Length: 137
Image 1 (cartoon, rainbow, N blue to C red):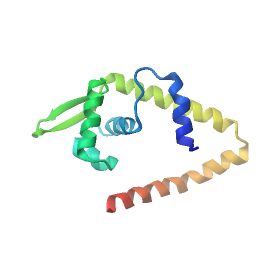
Image 2: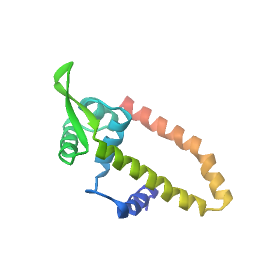
Image 3: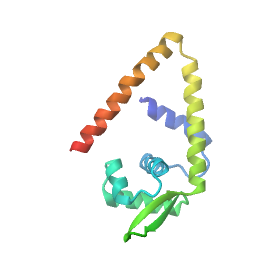
Image 4: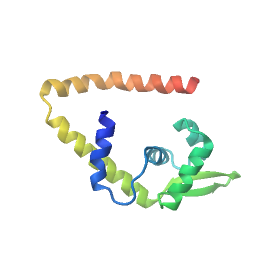
């Protein structure tokens, strides 16, 4: 089983509010990083269809996580912003996730912790090349 899946399962225990699906969390994290992003730009960034992102955004608006505002430059377009509740929820999730991973990394021996540190630059490069390839297709 993948590390990400195990982390997500462990994180579910302290959830407040309805559980968010992976794509919903990805959209919230993107809006957090790029407040005011439009639906089409979010779809490109997440490699999803525009109507899928629009559906996700509508659900997150209903759940009180996103604000969907009309773009003043193009009244047909929407701009997305996090609600304060979503910002607090993401902050809490990031804090809890860092604590969980930190506890388990601390349980590893020094050689394993050093191997993780040494692997980080290569993993970052891998993420960049995967992102670049996805943009080319």
